[in-house]
Length: 238
Image (cartoon, rainbow, N blue to C red; front, top):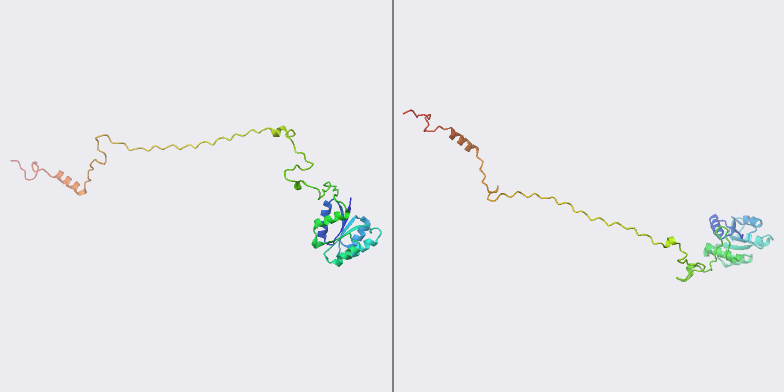
């Protein structure tokens, strides 16, 4: 398996590059500065070193100079990455033997991955976990014309379709909603009609109530003795 060594003092960047390169199927070892990288390079003998330039202890340029002057590491491929975009820095890196020089502000992680493939000369890397990584230049289903049959995919025929999938399903009958029932009308009682020829209650005379004076007068008259009565005072026998 192809082995790559990452040399970066920024731990977050080192982890991001490491995860991405592992996904490509490479074995990755990492170092936090140039001094640690030189010791690992002799021990691990990586196929490629991706290194930052500005690092503590030993800079990337000094590390590259030592790698090229050491017999055990002189043939290791090196990609230099830096924030320095001046032409003299690029020329210095190339003169020390860098295989490629990248400016961090001008590239992304996918550009770094593509540079790794370019320097190593591999287009498809075997990934033991997920299988081979497809070549990005190979045609995909999305790049084929609409309506065209994708290459390598055979469309299923009716004969290959299971009979259970072809059997029509029985529709489920939905019961019709019941019609609303109208409420029963409450009969209204009509007043009884008076018999023919009889006076209606409204037409019958109503006796006027007697006052208290009229009642007293009637009682007085009833108790007054009759002049023709023998008991009337003054009437004597003739």
